[in-house]
Image 1 (tube, rainbow, N blue to C red):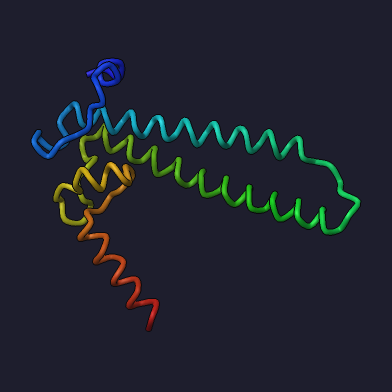
Image 2: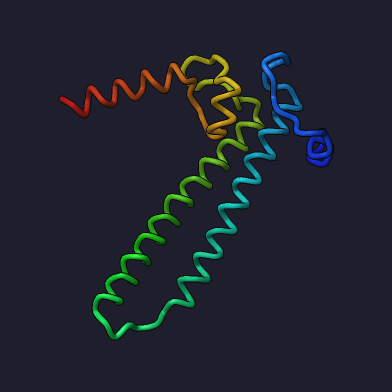
Length: 141
């Protein structure tokens, strides 16, 4: 099914009533990921443009400090976005190889609600919770 066909359908949402990760669902999540990636790239371009235009040297120390803090925050945000784009690209590769939507630990379906909320998810909710509990225990030791 092409992206245009999916977009032409009225407000398609994957349903538990259909086969898990069928062609229609895969195309839906592929478009969701591609749109998310494009939004991030657009925001990055805007941030870069803003950083390039904001090269003025403020005579007031407080203004300069505020500007530097803003600049550092924008750069950290861009770094997080770069990592997120990498995860989106990995999810797109999983769609292509047929492993998208399946938990990397258990091999069980991740679940449509979780994928809708976090389309880059690689673990089912239960596996993610177990992982977080183990991390918490190791962190508390």
